[in-house]
Length: 146
Ligand code: DQA
Image 1 (cartoon, rainbow, N blue to C red):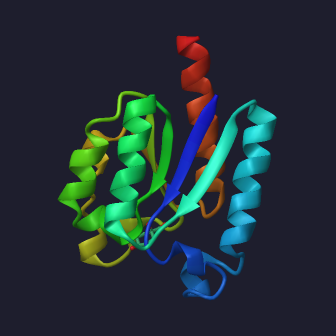
Image 2 (image 1 turned 90 degrees about the vertical axis):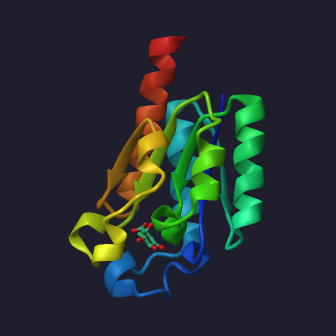
């Protein structure tokens, strides 16, 4: 079973990007962690990152067509992209929204998520572990419906 782990803008710069907020580990470290976690859970995990809203929406359409579960860190798109939200509303398999930081504890503009209402659930504030927990949630949900 394939799971897509999609990452929005600036997440490719993990490690150098605001390490006080997002930690010192790199995006490549995150990819390795997601793959290893998937292997342990019996899921085939494919990790992607883009800074481009159109590319992200294309990946969501692909997931909708193939009924693929998605773990998504929409990054800044979280707070304003109605186009991404409308794409996500077409998904039928589980969608877990993840964040490294806890947006509720940060600036006011991060308190709104325009995608949260179309997600199955949201996991935020646990650093890289947010992704591990999201993949575990997908594995649990797939076991329930198997
Ligand atoms: C983020 C939180 C967002 O507010 C921010 O724009 C990001 C990363 C997180 O993972 O904590 O780019 O999604």
